[in-house]
Length: 351
Image 1 (cartoon, rainbow, N blue to C red):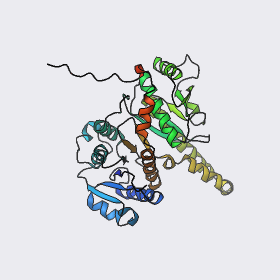
Image 2: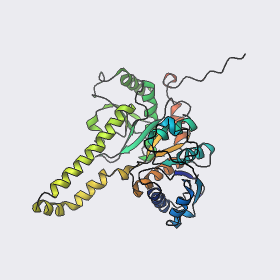
Image 3: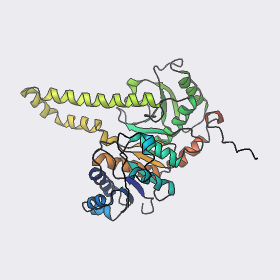
């Protein structure tokens, strides 16, 4: 672990900014003593924060950043901020000073900056945003794309399947992840031409995954598959719906258990089960979405994540570095048919 590349931290991102980011990174450092960090942000504030985390101070380097990307800024505006903490964190990955970047900042800006600086891997048209979601099965499920690409063709969906399976083999420790495409039905004739064409390619291609056809929205949390693939529009709607449903369930239960004295007594009896439910639904325990398909590791922590959530995002970055996710994806893409990969760039004609 001592030789592990450093992780670049955009310390100014997120709803709480420096305080929570530093607490989360310090927690990750306690869990993984070999981790080292480059912290990007306001130097004075970062030094003050490190005084509260001596275990982190010895493993960190501070790089001052003049500006911060605001959560409401458009990507086209944010990418002009070359000296922002977010831009400098990504630049550190590009230069090789860091092996991965972690940010809790503006998702659209982070994707735009990462794609512009790191570029997509050979064989990949577009990067995809992937995250782990809780299920009723033995494992969580990897889902992508969650918003980076609102419209996708069959080739994109095949590439996402390969990238998602590579991620699942690392995160879930599976040799043959079960992959399904999100659809409006499980029958072969259901769905758009793009989804059906992607399914045909996946069925005919030998890959380190098990393609199991289609799944529907109500089966996302069933645990019946390990990777769910869809376009970014559908994925983002599904993700936000799941998050809203989780909040709805917890709010309804809280109201029910405080509605009367008898209900409060019932809560005391069922308190262990309620703690288990809260832990299972807490997004901090599944924090750390990944931009797959780039020439470098970039992890997006939720803006409202607490220190545990930030630590989990750092853990995701460290694990992907250790397992060399980019090499795995590149090796798997070599088995994908040529028509499902990007066309090679043509050399300019000689004058």
